[in-house]
Image 1 (cartoon, rainbow, N blue to C red):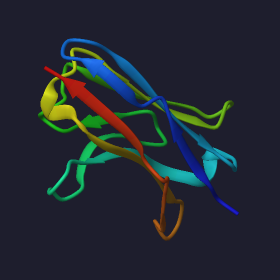
Image 2: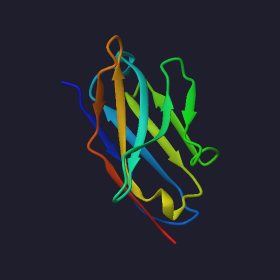
Image 3: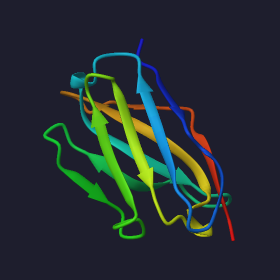
Length: 117
């Protein structure tokens, strides 16, 4: 059974940093895209960052230059390094993994990030 478990969220002051981790229960080579998304209170879930199986990365404009996504296939872990955090980054952060072949998407349960001003 595929499970994704996020960790690393918390409360941080504006300008601070956090690193989120998403541990996957199976070999991550089974997945093509692995992504981070976030959902702020009262808003729809939005894309944050993606890393493709080839290693290429993509970011939402709002986080470019501040966030870095990476995947460690040996450790079966997806990361999101978040620097220079802003209050608008406050949200529940979710990781996802798209299965090779049919792109079925698995989701984690989310981790809360709160940035105080």
